[in-house]
Amino acid sequence: GAVVSQHPSWVICKSGTSVKIECRSLDFQATTMFWYRQFPKQSLMLMATSNEGSKATYEQGVEKDKFLINHASLTLSTLTVTSAHPEDSSFYICSARGNLDTQYFGPGTRLTVL
Amino acid sequence: GESVGLHLPTLSVQEGDNSIINCAYSNSASDYFIWYKQESGKGPQFIIDIRSNMDKRQGQRVTVLLNKTVKHLSLQIAATQPGDSAVYFCAEILMDSSYKLIFGSGTRLLVRP
Image (cartoon, rainbow over all chains, first blue to last red; front, side, top):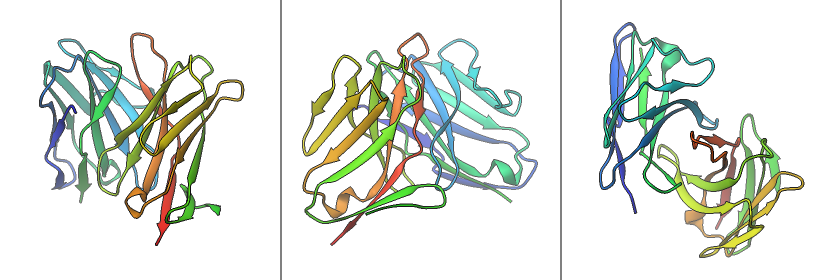
């Protein structure tokens, strides 16, 4: 099956710093990638939809200037959490969609902001 | 039996029994549905999908039932095994140009040995 990787798998940072998370589709080209956030014992909440070569579409309530998304190629999307604060601590998960309808999920990135 | 936790309802079943996990979806226009399994600290794993023009689809040990009249989806797991213990989410997609997945609240499945 299709494989999606995320890097790093976990990161700890100080409040006020920025953190970049990478999402890669390893064996297929992803026309669309999605970024989700998941708090403990809760469901996945879609943050934004990213199409290669165009600006991301953010869900209501998600600050685009805080969560910068870049989808520079068909196999790579990045999420940068700018000026991170403790309330941004969460599990960030990306998914990638190729030519078919199925989305394949990455393993997630655990962000802890001290 | 089924109980409601702080955030996730929990279904506890005996190993070998069948499990039924239910989900109510929100958008009557959604035309594609997926069940995902998520183990602790990992990303969701695809289990089975169904399109809105079907009411039942079977996989290996799993069956998904769709009732569009009441916007209800269920996942049946036959002969539940300890490895099935996880959180299960249903997701709906409106297959317009966005293909956005909207996740349900999830159910934790605990399999007793």
